[in-house]
Image 1 (cartoon, one colour):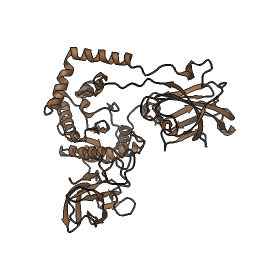
Image 2: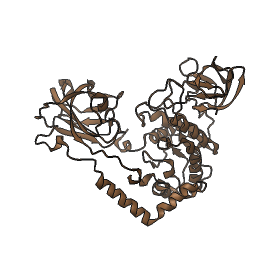
Image 3: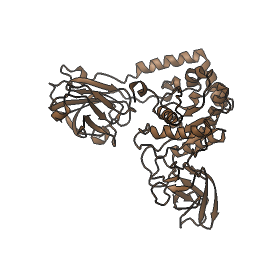
Length: 481
């Protein structure tokens, strides 16, 4: 992928690449995206006609006096609640990244890992990591790359006293190029300054941490030395003193990023969002339907294909049936399919437990491309995985029926279907035994003689949701409630 594409949406890139490979006709894409934003910010005022509380917020935000007062409060917040003081690693006569600096009274710590789990308690601030890395001669005199996984929140990397790169927030994977000539045979000083603003700081586990040059690699995991450079002021802030995030207000991003495009004609629309609404999943379904209808009205294309991604798996793996906000959001996202000419791609197998922005964008984009092949180009293809349709009860068994079967149901690992839960009228959930019979899934538990409810993959990060159709598309998580 060329450098020009790297700043673009990876999902959209792989979507377009798949479409181009199939049709051989270049297509144009417009990327309008801001991370960490709620769906309300992307809908126009006209789209909220059935949401009186949101309309009140919009009217309030139009008040110039109110808006100016918010700006003043934000400025007061920044001045009254400073986060930074002085970093000793920068302020000292000999900087902590300098080659000649001696690490006296530094403590040991492991990479990867969070410092709160390694003896550093209640710290929001900066921690400096330092280690001498042995580099074989075969890796010198050539361009190299450092992989530093993910770091919470920000970081700066120095090698042999030279600043290599920095990243100012937690989500990007750290992959830094090193020019030839910087590395030398033998010992090289690696220094990483890590800045954390809240919660746990440090290096996210289960990510790549190594140096790569040519065909050789050097592992960067293990014991490093650390020293605290700065401790940020921590103060409880009353909710009414907290600054407002203007971009997250209703209509804000629609007005800024979507409205300027509404005079253009499009073949279809792609949507990937939902993480920022997991706090109130019960509202998401109606908000998403409102956005779909609103955009179609604004673009004056009432039947334009609208293809969206269901949220992937995230956070710790769940090994017992329990409630889940992320599962509720996924169920709410199914509601968007009530609108005509829409498609939802299921990504419950593409996430990462420790990354809200998982690396595998290729399969997400290509699944969207399959849906576009059907909705936008009219080809007769299987474009969705199985979706729950209905159930019946026979004795102590629930028989589940599905749409979008393709050429039939399978499990991706040839095992029995996993991650089905069952409950009686009391809704006390237990794991169910399951089997595929024809185009249906039969589930049961000997301790539930009168089953009433079923769930599938109902968790933040379900363990092995393995139900697919034979075309290789995964079944959507669901509840029969």
